[in-house]
Length: 190
Image (cartoon, rainbow, N blue to C red; front, side, top):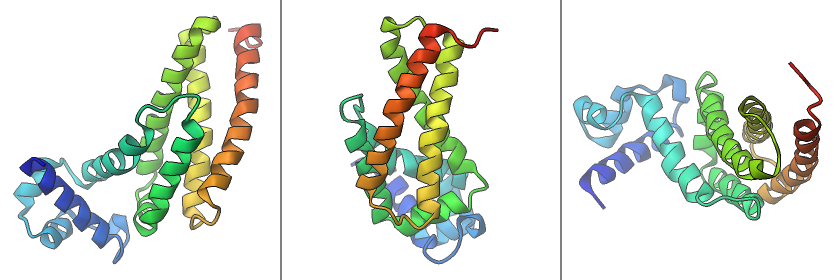
């Protein structure tokens, strides 16, 4: 593992440890640096600020390992894996979702929107959906999925990941049909 990656991981681990002691909004770069045993300049060499670090953690530990090669056939399994990852580090994810002034919510919606946009683009060969409609549909799905995940995490992750994923699949099948009808019938015109 490259030295830079080792340092980033150590900084991320320090942030995670700190989220067990206090809320994310109360954690400073100084706190993270001291916990990690580095100076602030080393922190800033790797990350712009604590939000950049937080995005890195979400990307490298949650999204990339769990959402790599997601497709229509495996997305429910990938969602279960993502939720199980969150559950394993429950305090960190609950803390950062609840105490980042909607930063993580916007980040997750952006990431999910990109995944849905890709999926809709792949399906587009079968429908005639213009780019504005594709963007609207992908935002709709992204907000729904992320809203459920955020609510689940904020509610102390009570339901089993499989239960959440099963219900999301049922809803998304119905939403997919509705989106197809919306797109093919051109119900709403400018």
